[in-house]
Image (tube, rainbow, N blue to C red; front, side, top):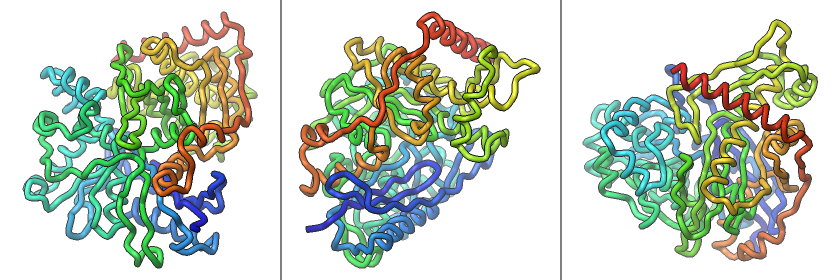
Length: 495
């Protein structure tokens, strides 16, 4: 019997591959950084060949580390940065434009014009999303307009569109599979999440030819088989989910009301609402959490554009730390008498504000403010943004879980997790298995091929590493949140 699931985690700043055993443990891991390109203010791009090349390198590296061959792999599961948009030639698999990353804001004016023209209600009703450059549709339109001949190629079927999962599937299968899963399709502004289909009205609105689009499948399904030349033999691909949905699966948040929050480059909180999509009155997104056996499960989602990116700013922009882990120690040394607030709107504000034009700011600086206070402000900014998301979720779903399950790189920071519990006024649970996103991708593939057990059994295997409980006095919590919201209000009002 095959010993592993090969899980691919293609993220915003790196690609990773892991070999996962049947007990959920990791046998081998390889990671490679993914170069970012910033051709103009608010523009974020990646080379398609870097995306595929780093994934291929990592997959080959983990096989070599474990001394494994293709026959040792039961299946491949893929999770990916969502909304990032690629258009490529079907004949060659080569992209016609750099990938436009989810963080990119170049289509903000186009989104604002569509909103002004009254299309926001239709988009929200069909997709559960808002008109924002974050999503894929206006990125596709930009590429078709920017590359000579692209629109003609799109209409004749010579070109293909996909989010990162779809591009990887195309390349891994040697061009035999142009497919995606429901969670990634749901992030394009082109997919009706109620009917589970690409929507002709939305395709017409955004000017996207249907011939560009991939086939949409369940998260656990047959996505094709790898080209035997890549890994010395064919490997079936049986699981795909966008990174935040994969984390929800990996955190075993299968029951309505359960909440998880992932802290990577950005922060994304999802609340399971079961088989019923809940329309948000708090400017959250309604999205597909996962789709298994033809059954869609929905979620409310809040998206923060800058979480771990704030720590990267401390390291690479201000250069007050040399490694991300130093932010913890530095923040703990901050002067408690200084209430410095960072609103990290480096690429706009996400949920629940959705203000792509806003830019970041620091409030409360004094002559005594130094690196420690800036580090604390950066870490606290992630907590404050999470409070905004959870408060919005509680307004839309009053019976939601009061416990927040967390994952992602920033959860290694005890300071941040404790401050998060303090400001939420609720417990924060950090699991033993930190690789929840990649575990979710592995689980979906393993579920489809019989490697892993059904969801209820898998949920029983979730283990707590540490629970952070609130220690802050209620009046102090209320005061700090008021300071944060005053800062956000000033920033938005000044635009």
